[in-house]
Amino acid sequence: MTARRRSAGARYEARWGLAFVLPCFLLFLAFRFGPAVVGTLLGFFEYTVGDSPTFVGLDNFQRMLHDPLFWQALKVTVIYTVLYLPLSVGVSVGLALLVRRSFRGVRLFRSIFFLPVITSLVLAATIFTWLFSSSGPLGELIGGSWLASPVLVIPALVIVSVWSRFGYGMLIVLARLQDLPRELEEAALSDGAGPWQRFRYVVLPQLRSAIFFLAVIETTNSFQVFDLVYVMTSGGPGRSSYTLVMDLYDQGFKYFDLGYASALGVALFVLTLFVALIQRLLIGRAK
Image (cartoon, rainbow, N blue to C red):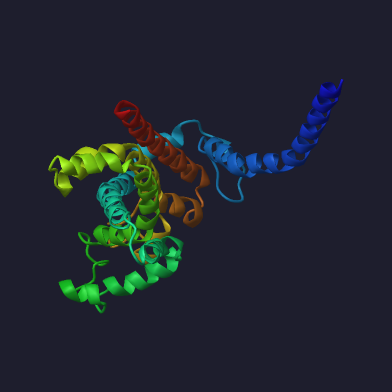
């Protein structure tokens, strides 16, 4: 009898708990997935601010395939990602290895390395804009502005983006490094393995899952780069740094072609999901 009363009391408390959580959960669904669903549907309509939407089917997506600006933005985004991803992951792994050991001041160094992550990217981009300008110290190294060069503008953006993100990746890799058994490295050291051999054959295989997780996160972040480009170059010079999200922004908030902008958003989501699935397959195969 006592057990039944306890069970009934537990169910009663669970129902009240669900009743209190349900409004927040519904708001989360509405504001998290509602805009995504509406934006996806809007891609099949022709819609501008002030006019009623008109269903056009796949016309926006066909227009996208024949739009040279879309392909230019896609090329810039891919080049940016190809440059950014290995550099970001490599710097994150290298710094995680540096601050892995316990020594005096290691927590201070970890905090300093993580500081760019919590720094305002708009503020940092404004400062780096001056650094890369013809009058800045980095611009004086090449005798001109990085951001005015079609060749150097993307590397400049990559440098700033890596600076702002490597602290996050460092923590991801460092968390995995803390779980590695030291006995494996000690056994390799006793067998005469050098630092590179220990890293390549002992540490790196254990970091595979963390590195691929970081690769998925950073790939998604690189496909969605906007604020950095908007502040530093606005897509210039000559659309040399014009990314997909910049194209989406211009179509939606400059030309108010919300239907086509939504179609660009759908294409960006599909592209990001496709790359993430490929990386997920690589993770599964590695396991």
